[in-house]
Image 1 (tube, rainbow, N blue to C red):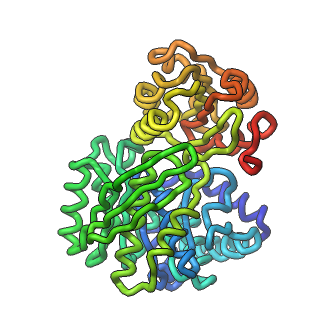
Image 2 (cartoon, helix red, strand yellow):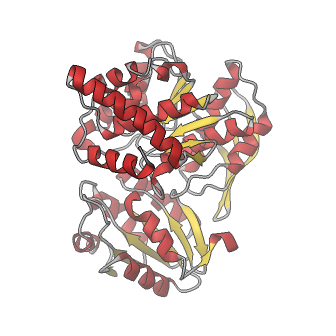
Length: 436
């Protein structure tokens, strides 16, 4: 199987859709001798912040000299980025080899038990196989959606579970209340294995605490960072852990007010690993945090005008976008390029973010579920009178750059699905980040 054949195969399987549940993935992994349980896994669930938190943890462990596998979806800029080892994506050859093995196992499962794994189940199995074959010291495993019935939850005994910020999203699958959604996320907590949670609303904490008690799992709540100093160049802060360990003058170049919470959850996770016997020093934590990057999450890609990309696509993320704008850009002219998927709560996203923009340009994402930009523009006009719909992304980019001038700020957000094209489209208009 070539790389092209492997990609065509998984795309064909993906068109069949998916059904939450663990029966298929358990059967599939059993054919691989349950190698997922031979890996040292840090399992992460949450509505927002999974990628950033795993980026911090990965960078710290990598700084300490460990080989770290990461499974993180969906892809933003290129497909293979969802499978990485020490931040390097899987090669096309290794992807094809692993997918061939997964395909054969899937066909055996289908023939023997009539169970056809979904595309995400196959990708999950591929990730386990790739990390196992490469002898990773640690694997950071992000759920795709929810937790309890997510295929990543096939692991039986992770080192620990981490739950990042929980908010309303995927309600048709996970539940219509924050408590129901939190219950799904807390489904990754395993018997006797600690759970670390980022800052949460009290109703979410109640659910996580209750599940931790049921599973006799240590409950660790990340603290609020202290003495935070923020600028468009990065954030400096002090942190006192839940066990009283002081870490001063920590710097992160990952922007956004929410990153302080993700950082705190990551720090608590690695401190727990250290307490459990992992050789790790304060300098590993400090350097790892400073080096961590997560593309597409309030990522600055250019200047004159300043351009930021963010995958914020739900109400919780919208709140964080608003907080970040109010902290960094109160005196700047702000232009939005927005595109969303039709199944997202774009009305709430707009009600939170639209009033802060000087101009909003909507687009239709090139995605099967992409919302027509005209519909988004009509909704945005309820909160901002300077709204227009671009015929295509290239027009939106040119229009935004003209409107922002050299001193303005362009924020491209609403869906991860079109960020790659937006990033590429900006190259000929702005001073690129590599040259800043």
